[in-house]
Length: 242
Image 1: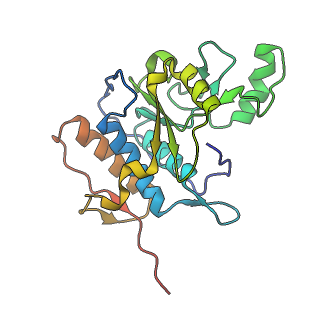
Image 2 (image 1 turned 60 degrees about the vertical axis):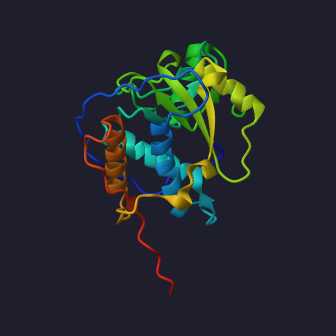
């Protein structure tokens, strides 16, 4: 993910206690329909209301990351979908850099972690831009009560908008993280078919909290095979034309 601008806004939510749901692994490089549906909800939302950079440009990737982070917070950091987890590539296998107090939560501030631990642990300085740390767009875990270590990774997902390219070096590093090339998947935004959304019962709300609640409801609806109520998924309020 190329964008590094600071995410706009903040969200405070109270984690809810939900039944633990383990995701069943698959042996090919395709996303499960359930996983694709959840991630595509974030992509379609951000296609409509992307984050804005300092120069006013659209930042689709950071928007998707924020939406999935909101979902993770809403589920008490036990969502199967972990956005932007940094991995120490000088470990074998690569190790996720997680919060010291919450092992299922990605560390919030990589520069601070590097300053505190890198040279002390390894005996040599960190060099930016040399692939010492990699950060996939989304890690899908098998068991959301455990950290996204290689043995708990179901799939590594790279999201691409427009003409973005999934280069060979990045794919090779993600294969090292996942442990198998079959667990690495590129998801193009146009695969989500956002223009043909069937969420006709969506409500016009714009708060991040409402989005997180609805996406959590969507996830539970799928895993319960329709036994929970179908959520009303939020859409942004339309912008006036004047």
